[in-house]
Image: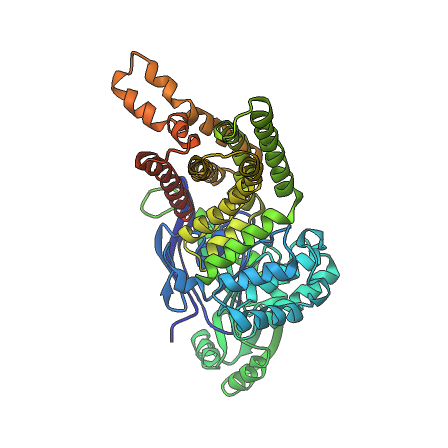
Length: 318
Length: 236
């Protein structure tokens, strides 16, 4: 089965300025993917391309297996989109606005009324049903924006800085609503706030210099450091790599001992590591670190900067 | 069809959700009434040619105010991003918005039709030219709307949209002036054909000939097509 969102080698430029330089990623149903990056790195452009608001200069964007483009009405029926500034008509009443969006998404009659009522209940809007949108507080406006995005049960939900500008309480509320609204959908949540991405997302992608850097799980990743005796470097590496859930292992010999550094998919990998190495070596120490999303983000950015700053070996400098 | 109707209803709701539409209607009706009364009581003629002439000038001033918000407001508030990501084709957006503005135009003109009543009651007007005049003034107003919608789609500032529309309409109104230039003899026919004022003379007399109808429908069609193409081009 194809992914709900397929972003295939997409390129986009504004004038002469390239924003996306061949970006590829997939988002599966049931997954919340965070899109991180500094302001102006192309996060909003990425969402607009998935929403069908923009067309790529190269590559392809597919939603639920259907290509997006100018005549892509079928693909757009699967999309719910909340841009950075909620797209609200200030002169309309909340119920009229949601009714319009539901009808525009193809719902009619009883199904439309039911969908609007459900959205108003899900996002606690029943108290403001007849209110003019222009008179609503920022928190309520955000809720109306979320309600319109999830109307008609879209398979793909796109949220651009959806908690931006809210106070602490509203932010907590918005997170809960987003989590509830994300059930069973493929969600792309873009933000420049790392704590928001860490709190909401399953997986994190970073946009840097028009390219995607995969950061993996949003949850802190455990990193292990083992000091071994009675085994050489190659043997230690083989022992560690045989443990399920271990990745990025590297070995350094320091005198009589071997220092092994690796990452794990979860904390419990530490026990498995200890049991595995004890078969053929002596475990002198085992330290566990947990890299926060912020630490991994900074490390990834530094790595990217080093890669792009390094002089090319063919004699050409970039 | 549901989506098109939904957008049409939304547009209508927006027109009448603020006092602007009511003020515009009130001003248009009041001024139309004033000009009609002047023609009826001071000139003492039971026909509406003068009223249609004044109405066409009023439309020239008022239609830019009706159409200025149609796209400029969507561009400014960011709701255009919603419209273009909903399962709506660009032509549906344009047609729905044109339809709602057309209802506004019909409301404006319907209000002035009350003037026909005293004519019928107290005189024996020839109703043919009056009906033809209303048809013509509707076409003229719709052509103004088409230009206004296209201009509104180019900007996010309603004032700029209104001023530019007014400028374009005035230029098209007086396009026949250029036909008098000796330096452009080859383009004389073109300038005459482009001019609103050349075509509207027939219209206000209630003479609806095929050429005039084709002219106004062409202006509407070209403007709506350009607006649709403009929306498509935004995705690039």
